[in-house]
Image (cartoon, rainbow, N blue to C red; front, side, top):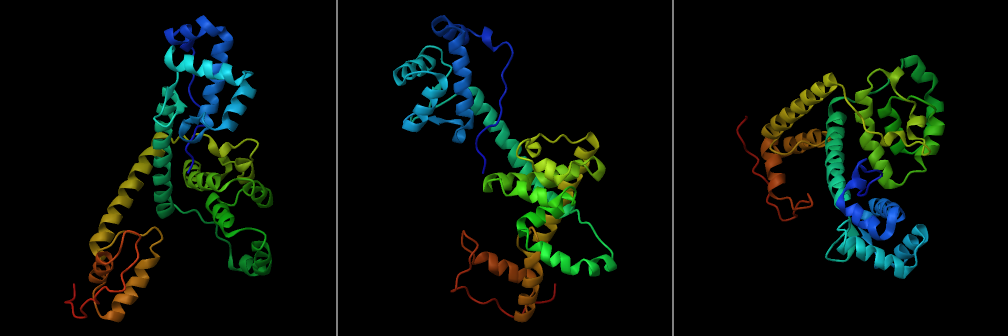
Amino acid sequence: MKNNLEFFRHHADSYQHPKFKMLRLKYGWEGEGRFWALNCMIARAENCQLDLSQKYNVATICTDLGLSQQSLESFVDYLLNECSLLKKTPDGKIYTDILAETLENVSHQRAKSRRRMTKLRRTTPEQDSCSGEQDHKGKESKVKESKKYTDRFEKAWEAYGKRGTKMVAFKYWKKYSEEELVAIEEKIPIYVFSTPDKQFRKHFDGWLNPANRIWENEITLSPEQEKEMEMLEKEVGEAERAHKQLYGFDFNEDGSHVEMWEKEAEGLGIDVREYGKWRSDYSDANGKYSEQRPLPEKEYPEV
């Protein structure tokens, strides 16, 4: 999961702060420029913390900032102890307050987006339908075409609404890392929700294009959409509570286990709620069920 930053705020009057005046007193404006360049490097590091014990990190910083290793050590020491513009973790990694605060806020927004994505998958799936005649005509070609694309991409293409040039979109899709694909999958349902009218939705290939990375842009919902989202979240929450009350186990995203468990409970001659409770009682932390679990009794009154 992504745990660094692509951007952060830089206040226009930050140069007036006493900490930066202290920095310029010794290193001048060149020193302040180097600090912000270093800040960008920290932002791209894991958890926005840069490990200077790694020789490759030090070599990269020295090269990019135009400093010798000794000069870098002196510069970092001054930022830490005299200017208080840098801080150090117990294990020796450097970070800044502004990046730590920004990462915390962004992580909160990313978690919120993932929750919304899950709810949207349950409540607002977008599927394009075609006539039986079209389906019949395109059956063979679709079988051949499906071999060109991965199942994962096909699901994303369907969820997006099949808008754009599929082949180009897949070409861009393959350029992304696993971490980035997860973020894209999380963003799709929210973007689709924010653009219900397809004519105003960007083509999927353009949205994915690594040169622009439009999918990373912040999505702003209208007041009406925010209200609708709140209603959907409320409905999903109520559905989950009702599901647990009825079946005795938590709501599963695709609901596939419900039918299966109902059949298993019927085979045992027990109520599905008791069956769900039985499975939950004998599950371990990983959701696996003990081979030693006692079978539930087969006689339960109808509920």
